[in-house]
Length: 632
Image (cartoon, rainbow, N blue to C red):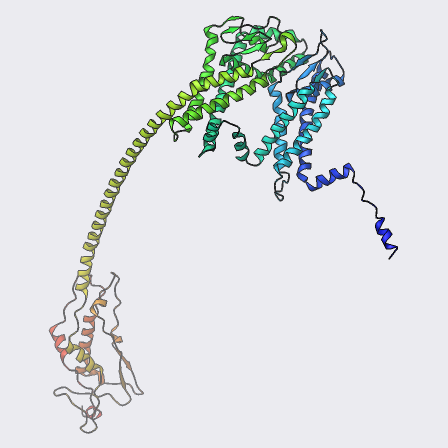
């Protein structure tokens, strides 16, 4: 026991795991984080690789490259950072003073933003089979952001050694902001766009606006405002692009001369053309700012607007800058650019008015003002992203001023969109009531017409049914009368008695001997001869009438009686005249009961003769006894 205690006391302390083991444990416990890290790194690599391929192709095709492949790779890394809004600094200038380059091509920014959004959305649904539950939103967002920023930090460190160096302030602020917002939008989309995050953002608004948006049907109102603002932004930016296109065509000679002066080789011209294409969204935002009124700056202290144009005197030759209006006061052609914000305000008011048919006029005006504020905020952010410095001194300010653009957009929205929304709301109510009344009237008329047609059809059907029943009755009456005429008369009681007496042979009495009929010779059958009668069931008159014109089979005369000879044949018994007369009477009565098949249905059967009736009423004589047979 004393040896066990020291061993227990000298138990060694557990070893601390290494950093790689900790990372493995974290990845094993949260597979969504690992998937997010990998997805973010892959998204960054895809964007960086695409720009690297493009730059390397242009460097290879250039006849006079300024540097080797290392310089081309540094330029590709710098362009990738510029696409995220990071400001670059050009160190090798003629004056020796570093010149900032902060104009971000907006079309170039679409690729990294889309890649981050897609990576975050896929990180939530890491299990493709759908067996495991979706990854937590925070886990997926954190994994994608960390993975992307890891590659971004390495790229910034590599680009710092080139001629275009990233600004560390913009690298620390701009790159994480763009990545975080894009990843958040991707996660929010993957979860079905829930209302919770939107409500948390709406709580930052003023109390009156927040009460309107978070009250009853707040989601519907917010969606109407956002939809109207989006339509207005689209009209404004589209109108700005149209103004740039018209001005470029108007100054086509200057633009072509600038394009040819920049470079002489085809590779350089392709590079300039690609740069112009990526800057088209920036030019559209500049055109929208010009149409709103504030315009944009082309150098420090030089502005271009519809009222006056004062560009910097020493601008570099560039095809898009050739579309800038000439210096001087504005003309009616320049003032005509105000049609763009006017159309945007009308569009915004139309969307709000159409969406608020069930709201009051005051609430419609409030929603229109909210849509104008959202549109102004979006255009202000676009102005910030579309502009920036291109150097120092005069070139320090290029592009629209965000607060001027936002204020002008808000003024146009409130001044145009709110009245239009109210008018559309009021007129829409009148139109809706008129349409409702017209539809009700048309529906009533259609219902009355349908009822009249239904009544007419019912009357016609009843008339047809009555005519059909009358026709059937008229057709059935002659058939019934013919069937009643064709039916034979009912047999009288004497004839039934006669048949019963004739069918039963008389039995001789033991005491008094055989009975004799006066005046009629009686002949008895000989010994060994048996007379049997075949029973004939009388047919009622109703059943005697044939249901169809098919002829009824006529029974044979031999079926009335069935003669079965005994041991000795009958020789002269049936030659008696009385028995022959009785046979004739029975045959006539059978013919009277069964109609002839050859006779038509509308003819009456011939009545029996008087002699036949007398013979039928007469009692048939009893068969002669053996004693009388010998005397005859």
